Length: 342
Picture 1 (cartoon, helix red, strand yellow):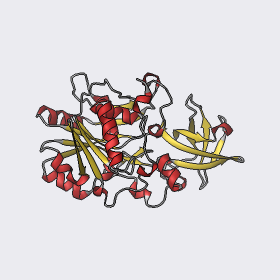
Picture 2 (cartoon, helix red, strand yellow):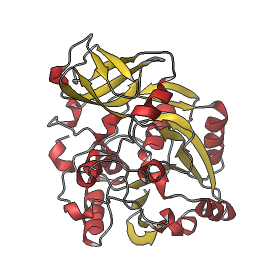
Picture 3 (spheres, one colour):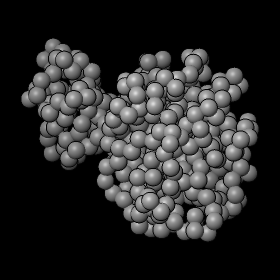
Picture 4 (cartoon, one colour):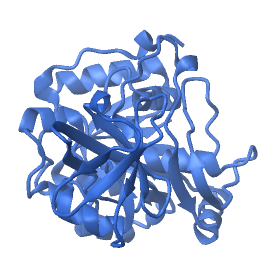
């Protein structure tokens, strides 16, 4: 499909620079079949049914942005996928000044050797020393805010260390938050529990590729970056049991949705999964493992807007986003949510 079909105009003032306070004060646009309702995240228990299951991504964001020097050249690196115990793939700013074998000094006793430049311009970085790379990043790294927030705010600050982690963050390895889950508080989870709505977790380490624009003119020519994920046997069994009982599996975030769909067989049964996925969902895709999606509002021409268009229909989503823009909803990672029930 032509990528231009997924474009829309978004006024810059609709981009949220901070999350709602408290988190569950965010607004929520409910698309229930053909109906559209303006609600709030706190209304979620009333918008779902007893027996439904929300599926969260329990990945934890690491301080994956680094600033360093290679000689006189300033080098910026955003890690996006682990390739080994001390080796990460990274998108590099000022990469034209970097060659394979060069050492980058990120300060605080953290250095890495650049290697294996990919077709996408990324480098493999091999971190020196014996300390776990996670400890090195805690010393020298910064929280990797999305570029559309960092550019307006001048980078991350102390608040983001908490604001950009979800209630479920446990498994360290993401370089972007599964942002739909940022809206959840212990109080909201308690309300959902009381309404008979369960929750489960899986792990998908979100990569920086999620922020990359689609440069191709046709969706067939776009290639997704692979991300690592895991669904254990107990979680797979639980998801299958929910649907077998006639209830619904609702993915919280496109990351949860993409991993569930990657783990599904053609009969809609979720299998245990551990490994990379580069699934790219566009209109025409047949969803096998989920019955709905809670997600934030996405960038124009992005793979995520293509995904929600596949779930609800492109014209339906274009109209929904026009409604959201006209009614003052806040967009992107720190913005409001939409509950999509086809």
